[in-house]
Length: 256
Image (cartoon, rainbow, N blue to C red; front, top):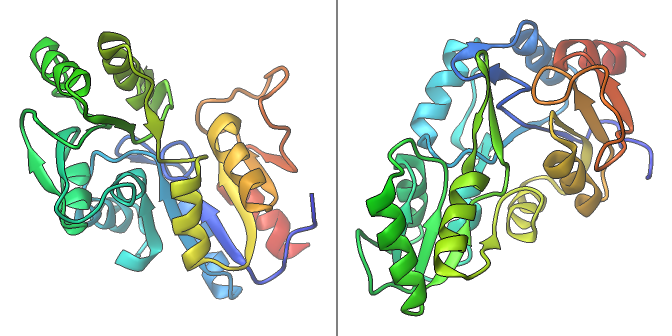
């Protein structure tokens, strides 16, 4: 792996790096502030397609991190990039996924027929939605998953993630899903378009953030404030750096 390119963009995961649910991780706001003061651009890359961009901006603001629309990239946007304006999509996800599809010019419907079924994080998933989605896929719709993360880190532990919901639809429809978010090409393409030079990809999940870093040809920094414990064993991707949290990582690299 090439050494970090000083002055390049830091791509930061949100869940498990900046916050756990609505609870900011200590030191994350100061870490982002220090990066900006040091001339490092920041992109927030999240596989959680549930919240809207405004909701993410609000959460960042409440965490003490001002941000702009151009600094946020979501798996919902990556999923929408796989569709064309005018396509019909059944969205099994939250407001953020619907927002991304609508911004792309996709016609969001609540039942088939459809050109695609797009599944993302939602707490409104039930048997009826599973049935509607599976039937649409069986009738010819493409099955697109925002991401395959099996869990979602929270202060109370690991909750089911988007990958669990996508697996249910794929099983019911007997059709594999095409994945859009980290670490897959649609998300990587969106990030490369905004960050031609990347200094670090920072995340708490080697299977997604680590593989994304490798796809982008960038170093991967693992933080232990999310899904991976300090006493972990072998990982899907060996990190180039490992830190307890974002604050410690930034302090080490900005001050070294």
